[in-house]
Image (cartoon, rainbow, N blue to C red; front, side, top):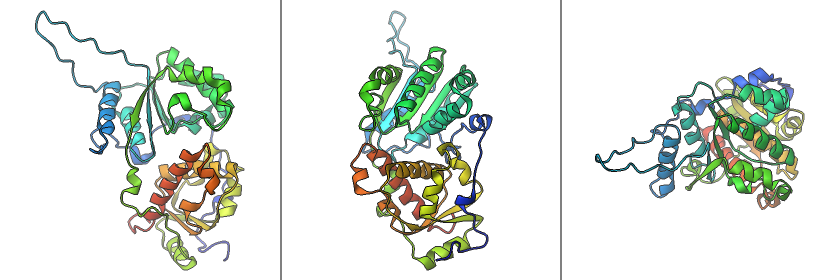
Length: 348
C-alpha cells in the first residue's frame, strides 16, 4: 500500500507540535465533550447504588448538597462530619467518573479552578519548573485531576509535593483513577520506597468508590472495528474535514519523539484518525505512549479507522496481566468506542 490514500490527508508523523507553559495552563479545562456535564445529566445505573450515592456526596462537596434540616426550638442540629479537602473517585473505566469530575468543576462557584489529566499537570511542571508551577496554581479554589496514576518515582515525588503545598493554602482537590490512592504505583515501581509520600497524599482525599459496567460497552459487541484496505480508503477520502492517514508503526515511533503533553496538538484540526497496518505492541514504553495518545483522541472524540490487527487486540497478552492492566483495558474500551463511532456517517 502507498503512504497515503488521499492527497488531502494529514500525517501525524509530519507534525512537531510545540506547547508553551502559559498555553498549557490556559488549556486546563474539561474536554469539549464535557462542556455541558452536570450532576443532573449524569445517568446513574440503578443496578449499582454506589453511582447515585456518589453523585449525592459530590454535589455536597461542590456546595450543592441538600439544606440541613432544622429541628424544634430545643433540638440540637446534628453535626455533619467534616469534609476532607479532596475527593477521590475510584472505580472501573466507563462508569462516568470523568463526567462527575467535570460536574464538580462546573458546579463549584470558584474564582480560579483548573481541570486536567494527570499527565497535563506533570507536563506543566516539566515546562515551567516546580516552583513556578506552585506559584501559578497557588490560590486556586479547585484543582481537578483526571486519570490519576503514578507510573514512576519522579511523578510520585512531584505530585505529592505539589498537592501537599496547594492543600496547605486552601485549594480543594477532586481526582479520578482506577486505583485507590493508597495503592497508587502498586505493581509498577518500588512503591514501598514512597509509601510515606503516597499515604500523606491519600490522607487529603475522601475516597468514593463507584461501581458499574463500562457504559461504552453496553451497546457494542466488544470488539474494535477493523477495516480492509478498500473500506479504509473510502473512509479517509469521504471524511468530512481533515483526516489523518499514517502507518501504525510510524505513528508509534513518532510518539517517542513527542512529549505526551503535546499529543493533543498532534490531532489539532482533524475530524478522523486513520491508522494502517496495526500491529500488536510488545514494548511497554510504546504501549504506554499509545495509551496516552488514545486518551487525547478520546477527549477530542475523534473517530478512528484502522486496518490490520483489531485495536482491541493491540496490547500483548502479557501486558494485560501486568501492573498497567487497568490502563490498557481503559484504552481498549475507548478504542472500541472510537472505531464504532467512525461507522456513523454523522461523525465522519
